[in-house]
Length: 473
Image (cartoon, rainbow, N blue to C red; front, side, top):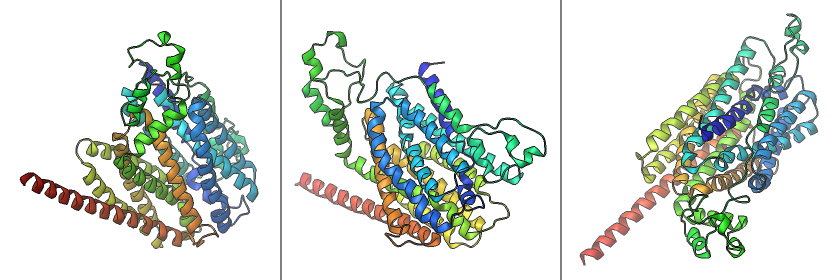
């Protein structure tokens, strides 16, 4: 097996196992159940927002230290915080412990940037598109397995909502009533512990993109050219041997922070990158907010469901989102120009808003499930197209930097949505009111981008006509 493919497979196993969290589709059912003494209002206003703010604040630090620590320690941190989170879910009961848990959940999510960027420091840039698709696909597989597993456990009455948490932590089945009756005592599979142990086995990173980079020892003139958006030279591109460089040449290398700034400025002085990055951030923020509180909405629509189909809904949504992402990749490749892509995304954004309205304006839980699944499928398409458009205009070395920064902007937008619609500092809307607001958020985004496309079209047409008239004169 080729080295790059071996590394990709090792990382993908971690990504897949990390996503096997069968308790997540039912976490609200569990937290509002008899195992904990908290109300829906406390959960919505005092617990979940902590995770949003913690994710935002910690992403800033994680974003800066991931490259410096060479990725692997942060990947191990993902597994370690996963163990802490699900240990606290099982063995704590207070409101304060839930808020502390949400802080660690912020760490768990923020460190995910190391999972996505580790591979760029380990493989040649010609393999970037392949390994990127591998890491995304691994997460989809893990989520699919997780959704199916949780639904089977609930439907077959093998586990209750609390016991689903044991699939993510080591525990003996003998502690569970249904197993005592059968006198079976095997050790239960532990996804987060396995993910953490697997992370220790990942190959270490000897060089990184910024702080531990094998520089090509560019001249100041070359550095200036880079800031004007040229490709950054990678090891092996230079015809000069590193061993032959003098100390004076070494002093001319761009330092890590300077190279970060060069890549940042090169990206965000490009109008297309800004346009598509803004779409990426706005879409991701809305998606995170919709998925974060959806179980609370379902609990309002159906307080005591005979069977909660949350796991099956998650599985179907994951499969549809994966297919939508593949379709977007196929259609987008040399088939859609940027303006057409924007028109499609504007239309799909409005449809996403319509799907969210279906979720919250119905009194039938199954229609809400359908709306959520359709929303996830549309999002899978739009985020893939926007990601591809951003990547199209970037230097390959700056993928991790730009997408990390775009995610940070998305979290700022999500925090603003939380402050405005969820917490007492804003309108403090109920679940139905919140989702109505999120629906019109997507609809307004679609309308604004539609207007921007029309304005751009009219402006370009007028400019072309003026240029033609000047030529004829």
